[in-house]
Length: 246
Image (cartoon, rainbow, N blue to C red; front, side):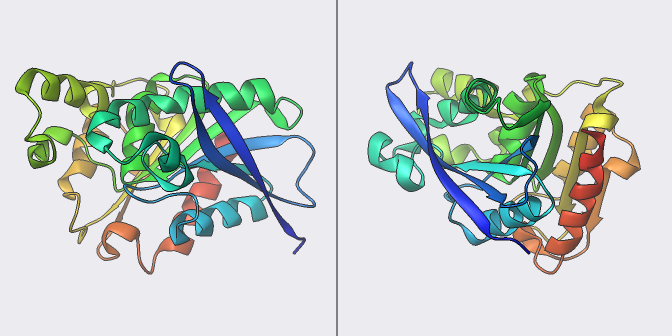
């Protein structure tokens, strides 16, 4: 195995005058041009989180460039934005468009044929199945442990007036973005564990129905919780096989 290289990067969000802090992972023997995978962390996690690094390194081993970044209010980016997530949650979701823009504009020497995939868990999965879903430049979407509707956790936004709260829910809940499409089965893979104690397992079936996914595109585990404990290598293998569609 050749050396893993971690290249720290700055992704400017010019509209808000901030920089999203990120890293690109690859190996010395990674092809000069290869697909990019954006690895999106879960809530309150950042690019240095164990699970994020686990999958970033696995995908880099497989010959991909892997980009992971710290959301607003998370990791190194928090130094610029502060930690009031209730004031920036909609931008956390929509920043994925900025990141995709940055790859296309600044990594054209590495990006193979505009092949970009999104991979993420929990909050990362929700970003993928909302703003990632509507961004056609993201060719493959792999979402793990994803919440279908953020209205199911209103206590997090109970101090926000109703009109503003409803606007936030509309901008971040996957059920407001997902549509049936004949191409969904070539583009989307989802997974969930039945014993997930943070996001109800039924969300998996709600997403499957809304997208019209085949059984092949839906991975279920009886155990593993919210972090797929004991099944991470399996998830990686499923994802790697699905990425062949790029």
